[in-house]
Length: 234
Image 1 (spheres, helix red, strand yellow):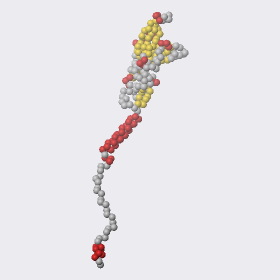
Image 2 (tube, rainbow, N blue to C red):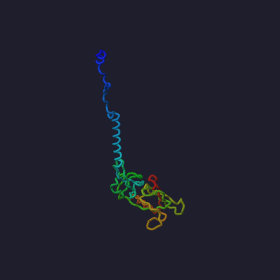
Image 3 (spheres, rainbow, N blue to C red):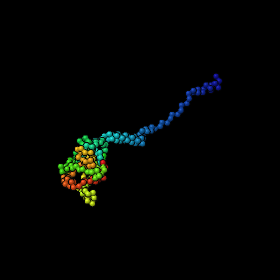
Image 4 (cartoon, rainbow, N blue to C red):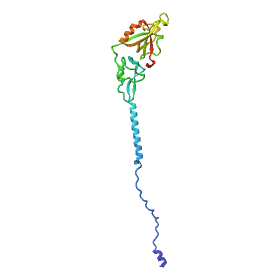
C-alpha cells in the first residue's frame, strides 16, 4: 500500500448530517395582559355601570299609586269624585301624600289650595266642619264671570237699588271675600233645576256667620261674582 493511499485512509470520514443551530436563549415570561392595571380598572368600570343600570331599571319599574288632583282647587273645596285621580308614581319619598290604595277623599275639605296634577298632601285634607253651611245662590249671566266653577275662589258683591234704571240710584257692597265655589249649574229653560232661564245656580260653602250675612242681605239686591284669577280657570 502506497503512502498516499495510507494518508487518505487515515483522514476521518466527513459527516453527512447538517450542523444544528444554536439553542435560543430562554426569555422570561411576562405578566399576563389581563393583569394590566388599566385592564382591571376598565373591568371594574364596566361592572359598576352594569350594576347601576340594573338598579335604575329596577327602581323605574317600582311605582306607587297616589292620589293627584285633576284640576286646580282652592282652599275650602269639598272634594268630588272627579277632583282626584290615581296615578302611578316612581319618585322617591312619598311620605305625607295620600296613597291611592285607600279610598278617595271624596267629601273631605281642602284646607289649602292644590294645583292641577299635584300629589294630594294628606295634611291638606280635613273632614267637613259642623260650622260650615252650603248656600245656593242665583247669579244672572251678566254678573257671572267666565271661568267660575267648582274649586274657584270668588268675591261676592251685592248691587242694591237701580230699579229706575239709573246707575246713580244703585249701590254695590262687598258682602263676602274669597269664598269657595262648590258647584255651578248653567242656566236652563226651567224645570226643577232651581235656576231661572237667565241665571246660574252657584253653590257656596260658608261659615255660619257668612251664611247668616248672605241670607239677611241677599233679598235687598242682586249678587255679582268676581273671580280670583289665582284660583285658576275652569
